[in-house]
Amino acid sequence: MPVLPGLREIIRVSTRSQRVLITGIIAGKLEASVAHQATGVLPDDISRDPRAESWLIFVDLAAGVDVQTWLRDTATVAVQQLTAPLPELNTSVAVCTVGFGAGLFDKAGHAELRPAGLTASLPKVVPVENHDLVFYVFSLSDAVVADFLRAVATGPSVAKAEIERGYQRTNRREVFGQLDGLRNVVPKADRAKVAFIGDDEPEVPEWGRGGSYMAYLKIKQDVAAWQRMNADQQAAVIGRRLDGSRLDLPAGTAPEDEGTIATGAALPPVASHVRKAGPRGNPNEDAVRIFRRGTPFIECDASGALTEGLQFVSYQASVDDFLTILQRWMLNPSFPTNGAQLDALFTNNLATFLKGGLYFAVPEDDRFIGAGLFDAAGDSNGVLQIRVVVTDQSNQPDPMASLEGAAFTVAGPSGNLAITTTNAAGRATVEHLPVGVALTVTETAPPPGASLPSAPSQSITLERCKPELLRFLNPRSGTPDGYGA
Image 1 (cartoon, rainbow, N blue to C red):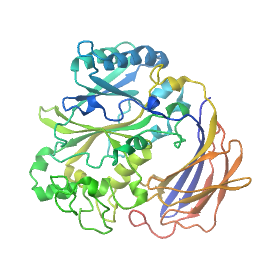
Image 2 (image 1 turned 45 degrees about the vertical axis):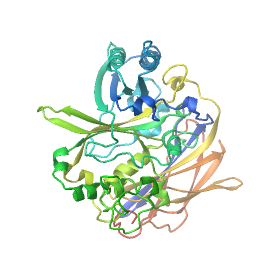
Image 3 (image 1 turned 135 degrees about the vertical axis):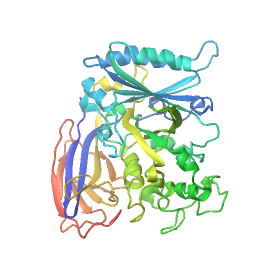
Image 4 (image 1 turned 90 degrees about the horizontal axis):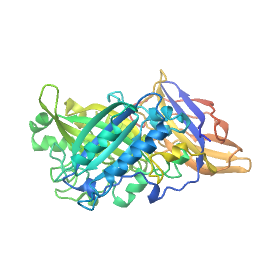
């Protein structure tokens, strides 16, 4: 049976209102193991090879296509042939991650099993392009990719296909010449935890456990403008020297030896990429992580001029983590302090978003790609997901406010079952709750800047296929002034 969220809202009204979405669903017991994790998310010998090239192949299926049959008989066969060992080499030369877009679930007749994160919105500065599928390929051979394209990007079942390309780096430096990936999920042992979805993510139906949310951005970088800057100016933008060391530490300091950035520190500058994308020292903020797997690109634009930049790809167990870093931090002029301005990379168009989209990297299945989407539901247990969304006076999402620190209790007939607090992405999860029993959810402490004249409570019963909507009202105190206020 399909899984739908039960929904609660807590709305704060005044100069800036706060809306808390409490989403309760019945989450399956399926454990995500290595055998079920989405293929190609973690680095391998092929994707790390400096000779590798990347392909992002976006496919839209024609209306009325039997999606299950196409996935089984066309996409799965094509991916198997793409990634199979070449007889002449006795080894594989390509790896592929398959991502489903939001629209594919409608075409498959299973909109109710769409992972909830695919309904999220990218910042307005990102031109959104939504496609049914994306195949993210790393390959050492264009020939095998050409065969793959003939299989998945042509024929009556396909309405449209688009291709984006990138290349693997030989020296770990991106197109501005800066060392990249220095703090890309450290320690490396945490990468699977950051990228893959397990039982603690109730918004993803059972079939998706072991999958990963995949965020894509095509970012143009103004290399000429960058080269007109001197070394000190470039370091101030990134927050690091050319050797990769952070500006507040001695030259040559290794990334693994970096400590926290002191509150109020002048270096790195508050608008530097280091300060905006990877704060250090606040446990709630440090818990928000994504695993980046992008590649640089170079191409000719319509005028014939070279265009360079980044095919940004990241994997994360929660879309909220990606949006927190991009929207609430990098594109928030009031983070980490009021008046910080945007991430310096996006000032004066040093970097520009060309397009983007959100996808769900499907877990590996021995039957065919996405087979679990078409399975009947199995046993389940209750999981409550609390998400905080801040809106402004006109009830529009406010991407600049802090979401962390809202406290809730969950009680059953016999008393309190759990106490939880939202993190910097505005999320808190309570697992192992009884199903079919009335639960009471109470906000005991609001996020910064809000007041609670009383402790309003609401009831929720976790049941499959039973969406609900309730609201709590309480005022926000004072006038908001920057992130966290």
